[in-house]
Structure formats: C-alpha cells, structure tokens
Image 1: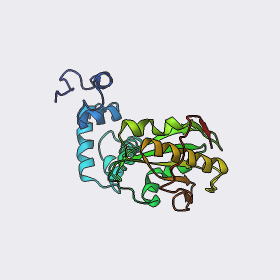
Image 2 (image 1 turned 180 degrees about the vertical axis):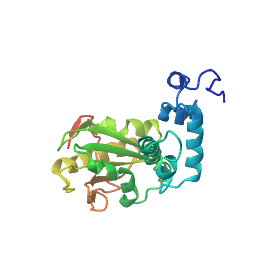
Image 3 (image 1 turned 135 degrees about the vertical axis):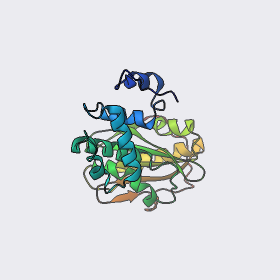
Image 4 (image 1 turned 90 degrees about the vertical axis):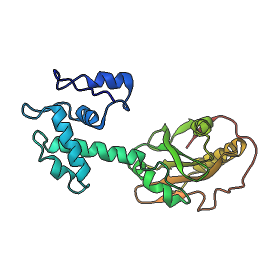
Length: 236
C-alpha cells in the first residue's frame, strides 16, 4: 500500500485522500493519525500514531488508557478518545456472525437501544445458519410510537438474501408489555414474512431492566401463515 506520509509534510492531507478513496485505503497508523489530528513539537503525528499502535497491540482493556498516557503528547482526553473509538468499533461489529437461537442471544447486541428516549424499531437479518448478517434501525419515533411501512422491514433482508429476521423495539416508558398496536404490528410482519419466504423468528420489546419476547410468550406462531399483508403504514 502506498504510504501517505511524505518527508516534507508530517501531517499530510489524509482526510482528503480518505474522502476520495474510502476508509479502507489508509493503514492502521494513518487511521490513528486521523484520530489524533496532530502531534507535538517533539513528537510529530506520524511517530505518535506509531507509538499508539504499539501500545494498543500490547495492552488490555484494563490498562490501555494507563499505557497511552505514557506517550509524549497523549493526555487523558486523547487516550479516552482512542479507547472510545476502539470500543465503539467493537460494539458495532461484535454481532457479525454471532449465532441466534433464542431471544437472550440477541439481547447483548440491542440492549443499548433500551437507553434511548424515543422508540427505535430495529430489524436483525439472519442467514441460514442463524448467524447475524446485520442490525439496522428502520425507524426512530417519538417517546411512545414509531411509524413505518411494512416494506421498510424487508427491503434490506431481501437485498441481503436473509433467511430470517428478528424485530426489536424499545419502550422508553420502561414497561415491556406489548400494546395492542405492537401485537397487530407483529401479525402483519408475520403475514408479509410468509409471503416473502423469510422466517420471522421473534419480535422483542426491550426496556432497561427487562424484555418481552413474542415467541417465548406464545404470541408468535412459526406456522402462522395467513393472507397477504398490504403495504400500509404501521403505527406502534
């Protein structure tokens, strides 16, 4: 890979190159340069990024920040920014290829939505081996409702050739009991899934301290194949 660093410029315009070529273009060191922004008079950004990479390679979650602040020019704020970027990336990609067999398997990957102050409707696509393909937010609503089209649920599932989906939404009121609208919505999603030949594994309602599973509660039947579901607005 072509090195973006030049002898005459210790802080090259990596941002412009990344914007034109994508985030897969720079090396790990150059990605860290983007995060760091700049170095110091005695420790320019390229060298600082190299040192940070070495520290990351030998550190654990428990001592990463402690080790980062030992680098000249890295204070607590920069150390926290680096650690936060790593944690965020890990959270966003941890679910990939994770296998889902029951409601509790999906909870670790969606639990953070329970902290949202508005309703978020999430669709998890799954392959034939019950491995998670993707987790997407289909709709962000208000404090007590979310409105979306049935087609919003299945667009990406069809594009990804998913074998199944799991739906999930949070209740900011901290009561995970399904409403009549939740029950009706689940029925319509079940009907559409049957038409498309995509398994509808479960619909979860999550709160900070609890969750409700339509499958576990007997409100979602695997063989409940009924008439076609019209593509109309759904309100929770």
